[in-house]
Length: 220
Image 1 (cartoon, rainbow, N blue to C red):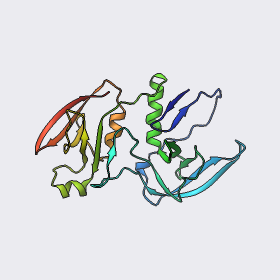
Image 2: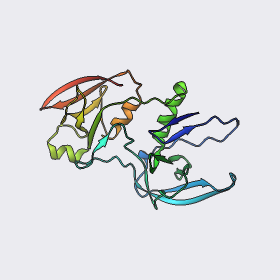
Image 3: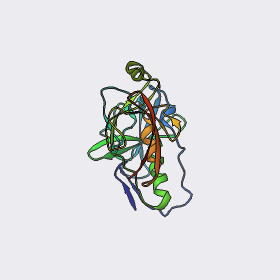
Image 4: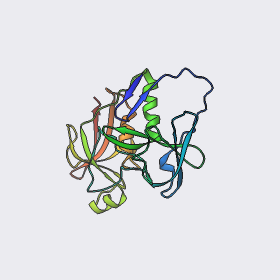
């Protein structure tokens, strides 16, 4: 057994063969307003409840000059209407094709729908060596999209603006690339770092005082 406090998950070994496998879905490929289905088990494992819901927001991590994110917290989750906050933990949300979109979990005291992408990220981490170990990065930041970068006069369409961080990063650094790949969506920054292991190095391209720099950091 292993637990993942960041994602609000626990992994158990089940001695069962020939189980059906749900198709991997991707919340980012869905459209706001798309019809989804929430499914959870009742008192008897053979009985399930089904509730139609609508995708209200792809992710809670949205570009904004007012919202602050901390790297060590999980920054993205699926939002549906009506809400599933009072639902049963383990409720799955599936798309019209039966693919997994999200999974109702609890992180600290807050219930949220974990994205299928993040569930796979945690599973890959666990299958690597039977443990859950996430890299740590002392960093708080804002996510900037095209509207925000244009307002600030930045030459890139998306990225993250550092609010506070440990050296060699500084406040007001604008990070727009991770390991040579530009951030097409600012919220993808956390996912890219979480795919690495503690001790690995990551190269960040950033703008600091109108100068273009490359900074290499070692993840803890």
